[in-house]
Image (cartoon, rainbow, N blue to C red):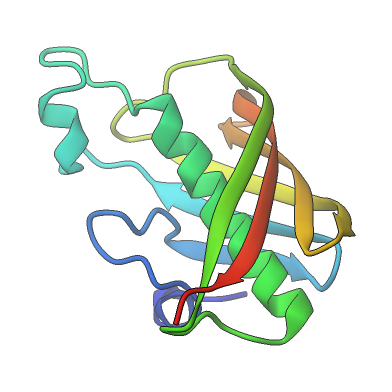
Amino acid sequence: MMDIQEILKQLPHRYPFLLVDRVLELERNTRIKAIKNVTFNEPFFTGHFPGRPVMPGVLILEALAQAAGLLAFDAMGQVPDENNIYYFVGIDSARFKRPVVPGDQLALEITIDRVRGGIWKFKAVANVDGEVAAEAELMCTMRQVG
């Protein structure tokens, strides 16, 4: 289990782009389950869409990727720093099954599919109340920038 203080130590993201609120389960080198509480105060809701707020699908994928980053950092036994950044390198088979709206709690479930040549591939599913909201295969890598 990881609270917001631990997440802030592990991820470089900050408000309004930090999209993981808590880690519920973390099985090293295997899987993670985290949550994102979706509130009406999210800045994107003012424009997406006025009168009928819906969380953008790309941000659901980003929340999944941030949780995948936490899983990968734990597996590697390291955290990102000013010289290393964890990047998306691909998204396959993304599907959006239901809208995510204010008041929903996104359950982010990620499993490691494989790691090859520094590329991590994950199976990722975002659920709301046990119902699939989005799913995708995510590919990420760590790169030096400094």
